[in-house]
Length: 541
Image 1 (spheres, helix red, strand yellow):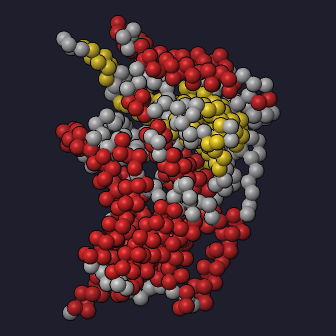
Image 2 (cartoon, rainbow, N blue to C red):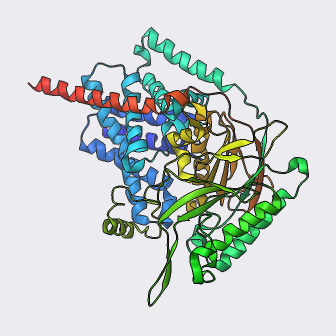
Image 3 (tube, rainbow, N blue to C red):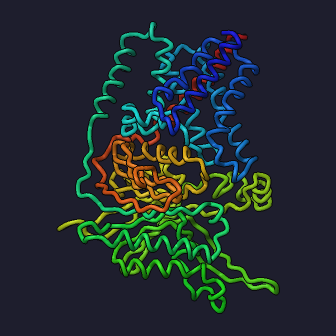
């Protein structure tokens, strides 16, 4: 392979990766992206020149896909793009070495290395960044249904295995050919199953449209304006015929300003009037849920053990702990709370430096992200129990509430859906603030795409409530319906989105397998790499 052929294959891989994401979402492109990298690994000479050429073709791809980060932090946008650009040449390098020195079928070694690398990126480094996995690119294909067997990792494995088989189709033995054919045929048959929502839960999503620039400097006057609209839309959603009343109303992530429901005006003492925005909104929403007689699920901050600190020049409020929470407000005034467990790296916590205050502050200042929060991570995957009755002898329903970034984390969503192999939640309701995406509507669509794999993995429905959109309902087989306004996608528009969802289906195999495919692939990759280098050492001797 000459240098121009190498560059062409590298460019084609990057283009296919782009086409596998929203708004195109091509499964064929998701298959071809690793295929062209495998061609480079098998037909080119490896060296630093090859490495740099592939990095330089990958970098524009990731700069484009993550362009929404520019308005938050330019250095962070560039560094994350460089970080994402190194994985493709790393795969080429490892596959080139392993294929040359270890006798193992390509349709096993290539996917093992690929998923092992995805495991490192998605589960380990910097707390995990599992966006844009190959399996997610297959969301619109029948192969995605394999996620209910081995999570998104199995979908990635099979996809790369098929790509590798295309390289060696003439040399595939009968067993390998039959096995791949069975997997493909089985996935196609499995995908034809239709899932009906039995005992439907009526949900009304109140989609807000508050730009992130406003939320960063949310004055009390602006809060009154934005929350006035939210309360009015909530009232409109509840003011329908009794048979159409929602069983639950859902607000997006952090759409209720203030310090949350764990503090009250008494915590602020004589300074209560000065700090009205901290306590007034939880009180108002509690009274509103009682008036409507409907549970309201809302995203809010939670400040624990609030204290007021006075100096000669200023008065400030400090919490002992600070969480990003989903809070269920019941008509009787009681509340239940889930605290976000998988915090967004470099947004809600600083990997590796968060325990060193001076270094933490310096990194934030360098990255231009000093305005982002340092939060405590929740530790318990708490389901929220809605006691409203859906029918005679009904027990109500439990809600799992992955918050924003968590929908990309298979293990987090699984822990919210299941507990020791028993269903923990009947439906998933994800609260998100997609105002961070600015005017990047493709990123909003991709956020929904990430969520679709979680629904297939757990065979349950998910309702997404997103500030600035795009809110949606996703079925257990990954089918999706977006919030719309006069036939157009409701992006950056205040919208009432009504939908019906059913209880989760029977237990899928993925509940038992979990992320095993990822970890086994990582372990297998390490063995392959060690063996290839040991064999080289032996050959040198």
